[in-house]
Length: 277
Image (cartoon, rainbow, N blue to C red; front, side):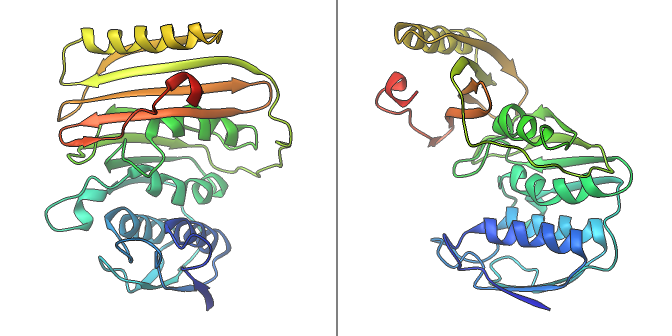
């Protein structure tokens, strides 16, 4: 049993997710203590608990301490990672539901499934665009394209947008198995080639995303930057709006801006969009 201190470094959920991924891949049992010890609400939140159970499902692991708020977890893999069709719903991890980020579950199981024999299809339900978590748009436009350079083949399809605090989003993840990841060189970012953007609303008038797109393009073009912002009205269970900007450099990709507003939740724009970019 490998002992892991969950308070190490920033003391957040990344220690947990990385440990679960590596345990599933290597088949080695782990015990994690002080889980998310440096967070305002330590222990397993809904998205972390779902990640634990998702990792357990793909390698038939035995669990101890898999409860909401738990700060200790034992994870003992029962075999090699199995490709297949899976469904994981973050809202089921807590009484009353949750808009916890499905992308954290995705990051936990993606590499184990990519290394497994056979292809996998995973349905993820919960929050797709949540503060303090990578958005599904980031996963699609930055994270997966960079992993593709390492030989990892995976695609996501956003079926319904799930803003915080309502949630209710759905993501389809397809993973090609049998991958042997290779290294990549990211020491030099290279020159900026283009900025592309996405202005999205759900359950709001179709003219709103176009106004958002026009304003973002105007500000960036005034800064002499090449930019194209697409305006979309998408499916979701609640009103919400988001603006996402991704920079394409010669050798890499980077998320410049992610802004969302839904109900009482708002992640504010920087004082100067142009300066931020």
